[in-house]
Length: 431
Image (cartoon, rainbow, N blue to C red; front, side):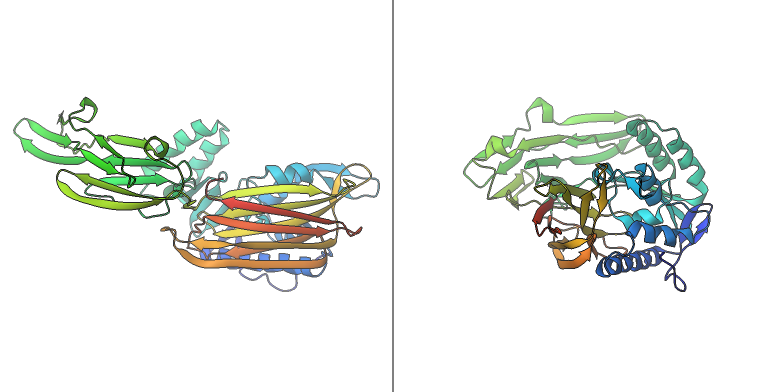
C-alpha cells in the first residue's frame, strides 16, 4: 500500500468538498509534484497503479472526492474471480473530456476547484468558468438544471453580461490564430485569416458622428476596398453597390452605434492554388498606400485550444494493446502538453488490465505565444523497462497560455513475447 511520508508539498485546504489553493502558483507547484510522483511510479516499475497512488493522496483531504475517482468509478465493471477490479478502460481512455490525470485529481466530482476566493469550473474541454465566491450558488443552480449546452450557455452568457466586471468570466478555447499578426488592421480595417479553412475575412468600417438639436446622428461609410492577391488578379468591392453604399442612421438617444459590414472571400475564388505564400494588399480611396499582409497558405497558424487525440494498436494475437494519447491543456488553471503510453493485457474474461512491459513515450513540438512566435522547444523522451505507463508532461507556467501549431508524440511497447508495437500521433491547430 502506498503511504504518504510527511506533508504533501503545496497541499491545498478543503472547503465544502472543494480543494482550495492560495493562488495559481501553489496549484501549479502541486501539479508539478504529482507529475514527479507519476514519473517515479513508472520509473520504479509501477509497484502500484497510479490511480491507487492518487486514491491515497486524495484520501488525505477529508470530505473531498475527485473528478478523477468519480469518472473512474463510473467505468467500474466488477471484480473478477481473483478479486481484481475490472474497468472499461477502452471507453474511459477514449471518451474522457480531460485526459490529464493530475488535473482531474484536483477537481471535485463537479469539476470545481478554488483559487483564492474564486472558483474555477471545468465545464468541458472548450469552456471554463471563473466566478467569485458570492456567485458560486447562482452558477451551480444553472448547471444543476442539466439543460442542453446551448441553453446552459445562454444563461451563463446572461450572467457574464450582468457580472462581467464583478466576478464572472467565461473562457472559451476555440480560436485558431493566423500565421501573421493581422490584429492591428488597416485604417479601421480588420483582416482575419483562418489558416484551417484558408478563408480571408475583411471587416471595414468608417464612422463619423455629429449632434443636432433633434438628437444624435451616426453616419457610416463603406469605402471601396481594392484587394491585390499578388498574382495579377484583383477583386474590388464597389462602393456604389447597394450592399455597401453609404448609409445614414438616426437614433433617438445620444448613443454611438456602429452596425457591422463584413466582406468574406474564399481563397480558391481568387487564387490559382491554396498553397504557398500570397501577399494581400489592401488600399482605400482615403489611404492610397496599400497595407501588405503576407499569408502563408501552408501554415497551420497556431492555437491555444484544448485538444486531445488518442489511438490504440494491437499485437498480432490481439492480447496486447498499446494505448497512446497526446493532449494540450489550457485555461484558467494550468498550461501543459502531455504524451502518455499505456500497456494493456487482455484477461481471460475479455477485459483489459494494465501490464508491465518495456514502454516509452516521446514528445516533440514548439510552444508559442499569442503572436505565433516560438518561445520554447519541447523534445522529451521516457523509456521504462518494466512499467505499465510512460507519461511526459511539459508545462508552460501558471500564467503563460500555451499556443502551438503542432505537437507530435511517439509511443512504443515491447511485449513479453518481444513483439514491438509502435504508434505516432500528431496534434495540430486545425485537427
